[in-house]
Amino acid sequence: MNKVKDYIEQNRELFLSQLIDFLKFPSISSRSEHKEDVRNCANWLANHIKSLGAENVNVFETEGHPIVYAEYLHNENAPTVLVYGHYDVQPVDPLDLWNSNPFEPIVKDNKIFARGTSDDKGQLFIHLKAFETVLNTIGTFPINIKFIFEGEEEAGSNHLDEFIEQNSKLLECDTVLISDTEWFDFGLPSICYALRGIAFVEIKVKGPNRDLHSGSYGGTVDNPAEVLAYLISRLKDRYGRITIPGFYDKVLELTTEEREEFARLPFNEKNYCQSIGVKQTYGENGFSVLERTWARPTLEINGIYGGYTGEGAKTIIPSEASAKISMRLVPNQVAKEILDLFSRYIREIAPPTVDIEIKPLHGGNPVMTPIDTIWMRKAKEALRIAFGVEPVFIREGGSIPVCETFQRVLGASPVLIGFGLPTDNIHSPNENFSLDNFFGGINAIANYYLLLNEK
Ligand code: BES
Ligand code: MN
Ligand code: MN
Image (cartoon, rainbow, N blue to C red; front, side, top):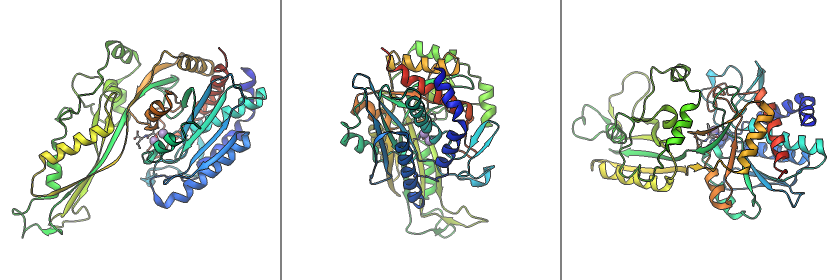
């Protein structure tokens, strides 16, 4: 609709300056020193939504960070869409690799740079501006809409499941809409129909009651750092296949059609390696890179620490050593079951010389959504209208834990229309978001809202 496009055009500068205000809050959910910043960001967001004309705007307290809710329900005969996004962001370190301050947004080369631009404040904001655009161009909002914005997605969404279970009536909807994923490539709008789940654990190996002199005790006491290295080496074979018994039992195998669909996407392995600075790819035999990232589970060491790592030598047997480990899961694996298998296996292979502590940090189940629905068909059409290109269906390797909760508790499958690009540097220094995708995204989502009211 031209009126929609015109409204967005006329408000470009305003939308951008509002997004900049939103980005300035350092809403880092995993750091307790930013608790107030996260709250201030939630309040700003709630006030902004209120100013657009949404109703029943609420900032719900949780034991973690607040949840922002709002709605606009003025057409009994139309479907109800629940829009989810997260206003929290990842930590910014290493800070010295940023070319500008992560919380002082700047525009350069038609991109906006700041933490959260793409993941997920910029994408979340698309929905608010699309809501505003539709409301102000046609004078009413043609469908029913509910917004739920969370403040602890990057920290594991620890209080959201409970909130959804306790407020299932408030959140009742026909479909869920989320922009927190990315396009397969430049100029290639993508709809994501499956995300991996995640099971995250911290493991600690405890040995002697203090660091010991490695000359006086070396050879008589088991070394926690070495035990940890041994345990880790038994989790995967050299080819990336996980060796935890039962790990693959529930894995949904790829169909031939799906493999063919993946293979049709414009993927170039050489460019892929170059873009991340590796000599070659690695992983489970018999699967392509896309198959491995989208449809195969994996186990990764995220961090490993213990003993002396400072300057110079310090000859000790460390008293303990730890690692953080995440496993990405695919349908139909269940995060809780995988954590149990992991713990059981570690206990089985651990030597009796040490104590082992296994702390599950958080988990989320994988999700897969049907693609032959009216919600998906209209999503494709809206993207076609806004970007003039035929969108592709893709899966992603990342996780948005709440997706499976929406499916299970509300019976509504999320439609994942993301606007990020692979070059957005999410979770990395110099995170950015393409302004073409920001404004094009507003146009696409506004059109989607309008299409959903048509039979
Ligand atoms: N938006 C991402 C998930 C994502 C990334 C989807 C890339 C598709 C492509 C989300 O904010 C995220 O980072 N999720 C975490 C979840 C974890 C902290 C529980 C993830 O995937 O590591
Ligand atoms: Mn995100
Ligand atoms: Mn993220």
